[in-house]
Length: 628
Image (cartoon, rainbow, N blue to C red; front, side, top):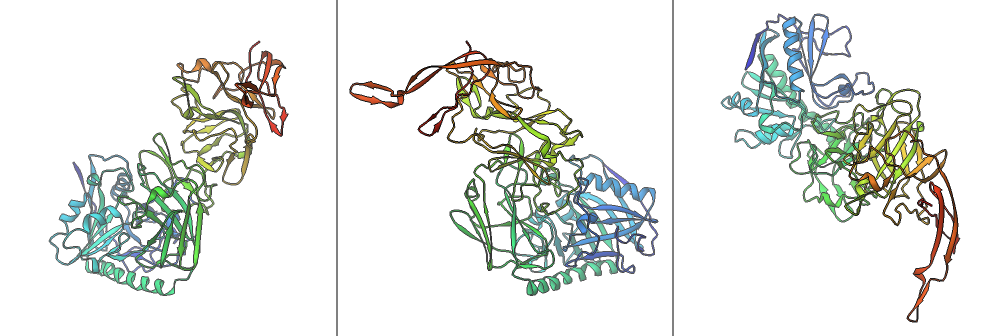
């Protein structure tokens, strides 16, 4: 069902608003604004979690203005931009507001707006259409010139017999004339026909089925408007030629990777032009893993100042370059990624542990680890939980995220680096760690990152607010039901010697240096009881004998730990003594058996014992507690 709304706008041309930075039309005699390859001159402010990619509306005086992207993006955009103003009325505001809201919606509403506007006395028809419906409006229109800003639409039209690659422009692929952008995002598209332009805005939802995608389409008419779009295409060619001839041999910087094929984003590797003042040449680019090297081809031969680009896997819906024969499985833990551009080389050694997925949650690895998760997917929307921002490098931004949790207000209170006993076997995915927050102010965890050794885990769970005294557990929630503050992540790689840090967007706080590898912590008793480590008042030791209600009931019997509980009142009263020592081992059938050396300890009371003995330079801490 469609709602038909007729809106008549009488406009003698859009004038400059009072604040030209909100929405500017340099030449008020032109009905629309189209720009490309121009240095942004708008004031730049910090991104916030309210910034989302896509068309926006601005009310200025008696007009309502439509821009292809918001102000914060435009202030950084060297690529294509569109804008136009209409006289404001209740109906026009409602039509445009509802249309943009539906475009960004994760759902597909049954009722979609449709209406008519006037721009410089020329009719403008607004509608929502599938790719096939868009095609119906251009199929029999004679000569066509395409400007395509998103990969889904390019995949659809580039296979059509009337798509002339030599006379078409696209942000995707290497056969059409290339459109450079500052972000690896979905841009607007248009088709120039005889006497008409079809202007197309794509949704940014990566999970919408390709056949279900509905584009916001504005049909523009009038000789002056069509001429502006024709001239704009010619301008792109000229600008690209200038940038390609004047680009410098600058440095490109690797910034982010997500190497998980089941992610809504698909696999991607992100890089950025380090210079914000000059375009950098992209010629003879070579991408190398620890095993092989692969040439990467970029059509235009340059990257805009400060721009971000993606290398993507085949079949990805992200706009990026596919590197032929690249084996993504080679980009794994402890591997080295190198990107060579002319004389400049960038290197990234990946950490010992790589985590890109935990349950139904996906997150990327950023080379700058202080980038939290509060700005995830600023360019795209997805129904699944994802902590990544492909196509935009936010590591250099001063990001406004609200009240971030200060890292120095956290302490480590409990650690299980061994796992849980499941069906008689140790299940490593049952490992967990517990933190306590002591800050006076409530805070949002989405700006923080945990580091376990070299592995980085952003706090990807949205809306997790901590109050003073709250405990936070990181672990697989299938083992720990009922915990209010839990970050569901598999910590099977966690070890007792793992260094643990927590970082905010300013500083880092060491929570635990890790147990020296020369020490041996015994966390499983001869009776197959599992003990966690507790940390209190600067000391660590084995947990008391305590059955937690937050461990799955079928597993709680032989596990002595208290994840998510605020310091259960457990009194320790334990003493111990060495009862017997065998420092020579045993002797059997004429053969010495030094492996039979032992130290027998008797404990009395309840609690944990740590006995440190130096034998040939080896430190042997003992545990766990043994009842009298």
